[in-house]
Every structure is written in C-alpha cells, then in structure tokens.
Length: 473
Image 1 (tube, rainbow, N blue to C red):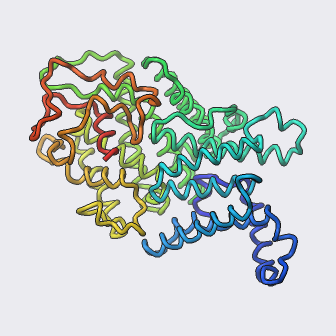
Image 2: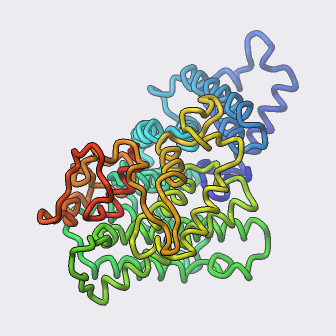
Image 3: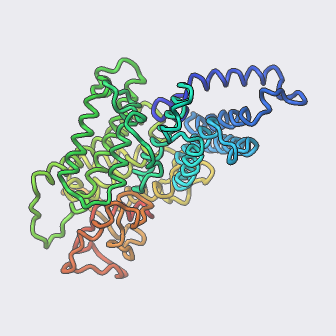
C-alpha cells in the first residue's frame, strides 16, 4: 500500500481493501475447500477479483524488504498465479473492471522489473479491453449510475497516467490518444492534489508526443509556463517542503518534483539536441528564448538527480520504480555528456552519488552487467548499460568530466546521424522530433564512424543522440 499514493492503479483502494477482507473471511471459513465452491466465489467476476489480489501482491512483493532473489521469486510466482486466474476468468472475452485493473497492475509490475517493452505491449491490451467496456467514451456513460461513471472515468485516467509516463520515457506516441479530456484528468480543481497534478501533466506530455510540427522555441516556452502555472495551483505542501505535515506529504512532494523536472527536460529536448559544438565551429549565437530553455533544462536535470537521491534516502520506491530510475540515469548521463554541464564540479559530485546509490549488492552490476543474476535483477538491460557507461566512459581531470569514447563498446560503428531519440527504443517514423536528428551534422567536419580506432571525434555528437546510443546498448 505504500506505493499506491505515488502511482494509482486501483479505482477504489478502500473498496479493494474491504473486498479483500471478505475474501480472507471466506478463505478462513473454508469456503474454497467445499465442493462445490460457493456461488459467491465460483463466478468469473469473483475469479477476476482473485486475480487482482494476486497482481497487487505481486507488485507489493517487488517493493518489499525481501532479499533480491527471494523478492523476485515471490513477485513472479504471484504474477504467474494472477495470469492463470485471468485465464480462468476468461478475461479476453468477458472483461470486467477487476480484469482491467489486474492487467494494469501486472503491466506496471513488468515495467518495474525491467521489462518496459513487454509492459508497453501489455498496456495496449489493457487500453483495448477498457475500450470494449466503453471506459474511454463519455457519451456512452450518460445513462449509467453515477458510481459506475466514476469507476469508468477513474480507470481510464489511470491507464492514461501509465501510458503517458511510459510513452514519455520511450518517446513514443501514446496509445490512449482517444478522449483524454481535462475533466477526466482532474486538472480543473482549484487546488491540485498530487494525483490531480500528475493527471493534468498527462495532457502536456501527450500534446508534445502527438505533435509532428517543427520545433519552435516560443511553443516550448508556452508549455513550460503552462506547467509552472499548474504547479502553482497545487496544494502548498507540494510546492514547499516546509509545509509538509506528514511523511506521506513529504514523499509526494519529492515524487512530484522528480516527475516535473523530468517533464521539463523532455520539453526542452529539441534545444538540447543541438547543444554540443565542435572545437572548430564558431560560437553559436543563441536567442533569449533558447538561452532560457537551455537554462531550464540544466536546472531541472540537476533537480531531478538531487530529488532522486533525497527520495532514495528515505524510501525504496525510487530504486524499484522504472520511471524514476529512468529519469535519474538519463538525467545524470545527459549532464555528463553536455559540454556546458560536464565541466561543473556539481555534475561530477552527482555522478558519484548516483553510482553509489546503485552500488548495493542487490544490483550486482559493478563490473559486468552480464554478471547479474537473471532471477534477481530488476534493472532493465538498457539501464544496466547506462549505469556501466556512467562508471566506465567518463574520466575526471581538473577541467571536469571528459568523455572516453573508446570505453563504449560499439561506439566506433555507431550510426550517430541515424539516432533520433531522446530515450531508448525509438523508431524514427514514430519520433515527433525525428526531423531534428540531422540538425547537428556538419559535413565539413571530418568524422569516420567506420574507423577501427576512433579517437575523440572532431565534433561532439548531439547530447541526446549520444544518450540514445548509450540507452540502446
């Protein structure tokens, strides 16, 4: 239950807890041992609820204090049982609210255990099943009881939340582009809660991911101002940590700050793409808007890492949440790659702290990412590759961090101009910023990507392309 406040997956937590107590009473009374099983628990809907219980327990096991290998075994065993219960409930042909919630929870579990591509595919099934129940269509809800309308709206909003975060990390177009109105996302409240703010920023990220138009600095500035305006509408404790009155409020403050910082850098992505300049190029003349965007990007890259480290010191949630791990690793890597930031002592200090945060025995990636136990390792291969690169591909001298390109396997054969994304797994045709992939290419600068022993290239690659290369592994 300690994870739910940061990532709502259930429509009604209170009702789920009451129904679970009912299940435990029936189990204690031996109703499941009788032949036949009572009508209350032999129906498909009841089996669907049992699958939901197992899915929630599977997700909870991932965040538990069990040792790494035991935690993974428990998590996957419960997930397998949940999948089996889904099959018995005939979930594909007779979806219910319990079924949709179950597969949403299981998808989030897959994501957090390093299977983000599987989670992406599974999320498509989740959205389609929800659509068969018309959760996305407001017009079909008019004649339904109010409680059913609320359940449908909440469930669809939870799916949008998951889709937006995963799509933003992968820089892919979201699956749930149908009917994501403001009232469904709760962004019209006078004083936004943590959940209200997160649902509201889904609209911003979805707008960016669905926008194929050319990059315009003024549009980015407008979106940043819109995001700042939303933040000013949040409850006081979400803006000022000194206004927090409980541990939960403090943790939600940190979670919101981290997600907001990552979204800011995501919005600034096109400008960061052109940040690095080669030594033989004349200094770039930047407009006031470009300078403002780069300043916001730098500020929020640092902020995301600091918040992750602060959050990690008081909770296991950031280290076990795929999206937060992704935000931290991609932010620190981009700081180390970007010319303007890697020379700063603060960048070097944060790099060391992030490496230390991921150096506990349960990660087991100190020397070789392939040495990790497949049954206990929940970091995705991309994140392991990013962590190893962070440790091995940068050296420190009096001028700051230097990039050691030769420490990166496959770098010499990398298609730098073919990389188009900010985050892993991007297909050019789906990348809304693909047209900027070549904007940093200067044909007059010598660059031989086929060389067998390439020294530091004459032109630093785009920071975002370099990051994409690392994350792709």
